[in-house]
Length: 192
Image 1 (tube, rainbow, N blue to C red):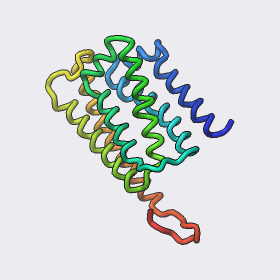
Image 2: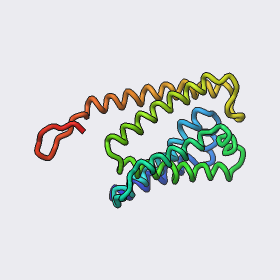
Image 3: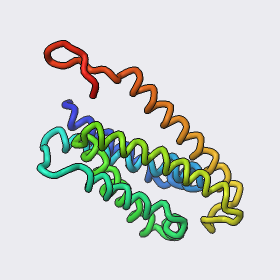
Image 4: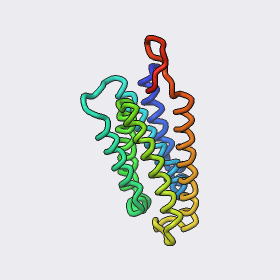
């Protein structure tokens, strides 16, 4: 099995894991598992397909619009109104899943491969700041943002998002410090 087939197979398995009715009910029962387990499973499935496509065909345009489009599509499905709508009926839930795979994950995987180090750094820094802001908002707002979840779920999500922001920042700094030097073809070390 080649790498491209493996990526598509793994992506299909992730979609199946995220949408299997018995597991989907578990993921959607709590706000924290809905947004930090089911969403990432669906996005990762699309990202695997996107990386497989990016390795086979390089585009002639910048990856920035692709990554921006993925961020906007994700932002839409992170709005409390649309989280509640997706929980209310099966059709919006399936639309949410399709959007997270095709409009967030696929462009994210494709765009990340196409992006250079500056754009990747910008996207990484933006992800950290958005995680921190979303976590702070979940904790600072005194009322429920999502009608389908309790205030305690909102507080747990806020703390988890803040912790995730710190972990992503630490991982980015560790990667920059450990992998900051790459070998050039001539054998001399260069900064990316």
